[in-house]
Length: 300
Image (cartoon, rainbow, N blue to C red):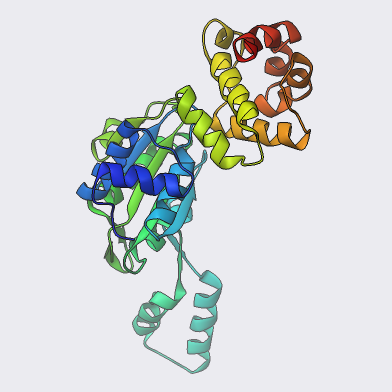
């Protein structure tokens, strides 16, 4: 489909593919689409940043291209590299034919057919209506890589020395995500619209759980949403290194359904703590006594 006509239409379209965005987030996405600007999403792990890009690709009927960032990521892995083996074979074949014009041979080996496209170049050259490019966890890459991204983020183009400037065939919808393990440079932020994605309110998390885990009863879904919401609140959150995200809420609900759980009790919480937390210390911190405290409002 084409870009939704309003913020409300975007909210409904995202809900139709199982993504429940609040109005502030939907407004940021709507403006990114209308203004054709990249959108930088920051927030804790598991709050739905990556899932938003996937949902947008469904809503807009565009292919999703993902660039997963990590420490030491190089330009050639993000943009392009040459097929050196094929180039070498071409040069040897030219030598075998006795070609004396080495300048011509050099021009031939830098043709389009020897170019291996990586995510940025794939996004720029995607045919209409264009692609959704997810630059995931950009904070994990180093500062030189941020500087490399500036041309793409600001002008939707990249420079390839052997070919020249490659501009977008159709402007890609670009989503950058960051878990804020470090601060990004201001030059990156200036080229993007910005939104801080927080943990959802209870009613929105309940809607997400019910949509993603249809096998969960209404009572069980409500217990999951209330329990995880309280787990993130003070003073309980201080006991853990990282609070569970939406992804953990959904996985926990699936686990409870698989265990034929009707009502969550402290024993069930203790047995399934490894779904909610991924650190040994956090699992140990979720004691049965704490679970009993957290479950009291749900049982009342």
